[in-house]
Image (cartoon, rainbow, N blue to C red; front, side, top):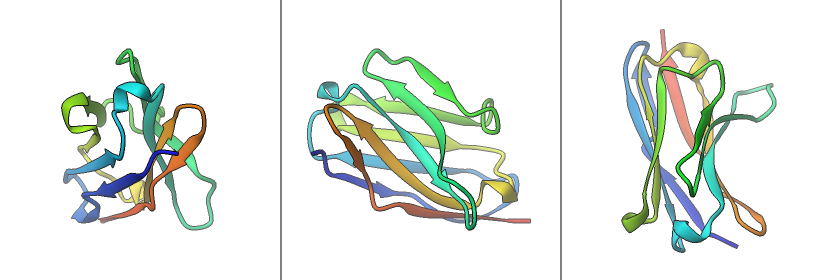
Length: 114
């Protein structure tokens, strides 16, 4: 199983930006796909953005055009650049990796104030 460590969460005003990072314990070239999920209080976990090892990306409708997922294979890190943040983006953001098994990070809190 892959160990994932997220960083970059915090408190930001609406309209601001944050960049989340997810470092993996193994080469991400060996991982089929990685991405970000989020879970707000009282809501189900939802997928936010996804990137495959062929660099195919997809996004939730709610973040498309505002968030960008990218990867740095040399650093074994996946990023989520979040721009034009809204209060409804407030959630715990989790990094996920899919190889043979699913692996999850511990989560990082993102809070967007209005």
